[in-house]
Image 1 (tube, rainbow, N blue to C red):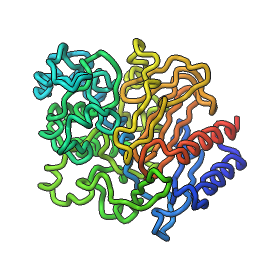
Image 2: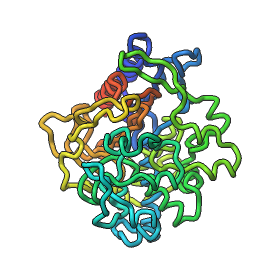
Image 3: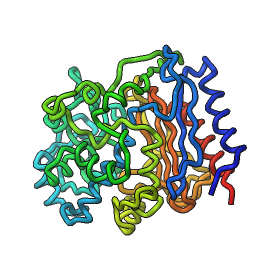
Image 4: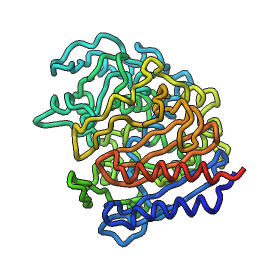
Length: 413
């Protein structure tokens, strides 16, 4: 299922049109698409690694993938579900492994802390109905943490546990630190740090050497610079949002860093896409033949876990922290507003999408404007990566749609 020459040229020229225009403020991007055989349909790098850099973006450029890490965390959880070590719907087991959750309070709409009325399950953590939020998406949680404030990207477990729930468990969908807690379940059940677990049980079987919560010296040498877009539209380089994993070198230093299943990984996009290729191939790597999940487990992950909330992604995203996110009326607009779905750690477009994606295509994103999709119906997956905040940058989202559409338009039967 190769891609036409016209399609690959369209993708490259589309990216170049953004990175070469100084008005966009986008220094560089990388786009990769693969088929179910793990073969690259497209691989395009455009621009430079930073606005002040002369180093070009390449396929070796390393990005903080932020919430794209959540998919990896979910795979780890589901491996342990397969082994019978974790259960999706057992609130007693969940709160025994995570005793911090037993007496956790709920921040109500008036700003008061009230008792939690129900238990939390692993499924709730993976489908974001456990009740946790993010301060950059939830104004009440943001205000509750001040004047000190919360920094989700540089916490330890003790600090994570100081953040209250923002909803009663099971009462609604809200994006938050849920999968960080799921990652802690993996650590406590497996007896391994989460990054070590990822390496041994996911990355090594897939032959991936450049996805890590603690980037190697070589990875850091190819690290893309983080950028900040201000309210006036101007963009400048900024310090990294996730520093602890970049500066920890010794084992002792690494032990003090929360291995965040929600946002902790750095990666080369081409390697991340090999994880997506394994999902396209029912849990088995098409390049190494290693099985990381059973076919029935992958199918379960792609089922809609929250049919009771068909419009969950249309509730809007406020600019609770304007340096980290833009306001968005909905997460993935679709003509006719069909019912939306959420699998076990990712959004599902239940109906075929305008770009050409098939039904029940999974997709999600990372705060620094990275986006991936995985279409098991049509056997195509891909990722676009940049390093700029706030989230929801129109330039990057436009290229995600344009490049994804070019892939589908260019597929040769």
